Length: 259
Image 1: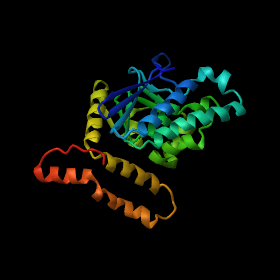
Image 2 (image 1 turned 90 degrees about the vertical axis):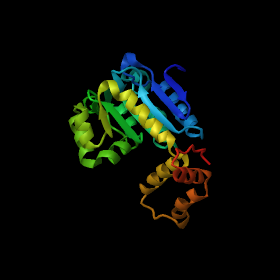
Image 3 (image 1 turned 135 degrees about the vertical axis):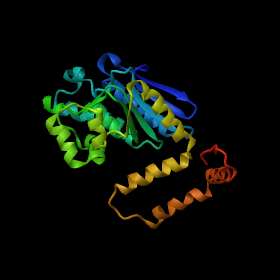
Image 4 (image 1 turned 135 degrees about the horizontal axis):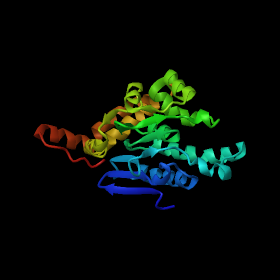
């Protein structure tokens, strides 16, 4: 199991790789568990600046859940409830991660793989990448938790188009829908994502975490409290603000410390 979700670190940049290329990086139950563990640990690590999520190889980002194991672990409503507790915990770990996340997409990004990618902060794909949620052909339903990221990106109409038709479509259509931020040549995806992660990593990490926190809070219709509004001013008391301000005046690149 330890090799099924790979973790690599390059300074503050962490890369999490779904390592099942023989089945288009579809996740079995053990992989879902380990994926949550990886993201929980990275989210708690203040030295992390950006997390890249990708699939092994270039045939697929992820084809979602491993359907071949369904007869053993997800063949009844009772089994599905237990199964969903594990998969949805992994999806929440990605969506609620404190640090910026970027999905690096080669090839197929379908089913639960597409749902997973929508929970990252950015998505960059190759020109030949393919997208869709064709589970209507399996007689399966996308749960509320799994719908959240997709619907927040593309809205109700496009979400229903994706789910009701069950089409698998190309990168240009995905870009028009808002499913991806950027398309590059297939052989340029890795470097484009690496450059994006470096740019994110050069920014002030506390600021990135605050922005993610604020945007999540804005999804809640409850009125903001005075304390929540005041939190936007806390950055002025950080060492990173002083570092950034001095670097701006000196016309140098700041080296932030996350304090």
